Image 1: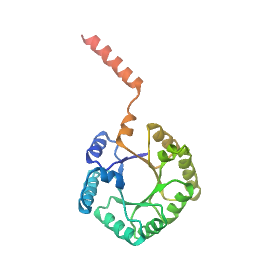
Image 2: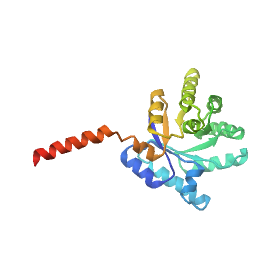
Image 3: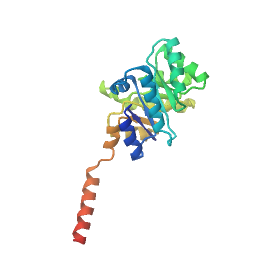
Image 4: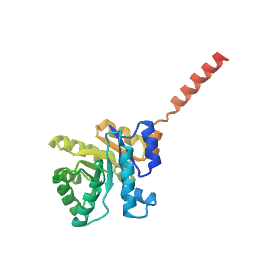
Length: 221
């Protein structure tokens, strides 16, 4: 399973790369807004900087369009795609969005269908030719719906029809989400860096390491 980092922050991405847990990047308008980028050109340059961090990694960067009508979405999608070959155009699952995914697919441009909350939405995304589908696991859990059950349904449906669209699970809230997705065999999860860092921790690991070091230091002293 691949680990994508859900951020637009270059420092976080550099740390993830240093740790060897960076397979790709996903961004969204909210994450871009956190970086205080003042205009479209600066935002586009920021995307290029993110792509440059992946030069030694066979990964990509999901950059989301902010337009919501077909014509403007096409323009923006093609602009984003032209920034770098690693860019995947992120498109919401709305009616015009589905048309845009189909159009970009026919142009050979990779897409990530986002804001997916139902199995039927995932089917529509796959039939339109989306490269990735991003179901939002944690946001479903937030409203007392079992998000992992959605991921399981999508995985079963895609297997039934041999859809080529890859499942990139988003809205990861905790390490348990990552483990449950791995059990299902999804292609990738996209997670904030702090969630992945929690995955390193186990009290028995810390206890064992402290015991080893204590024994060693007692021996040499």
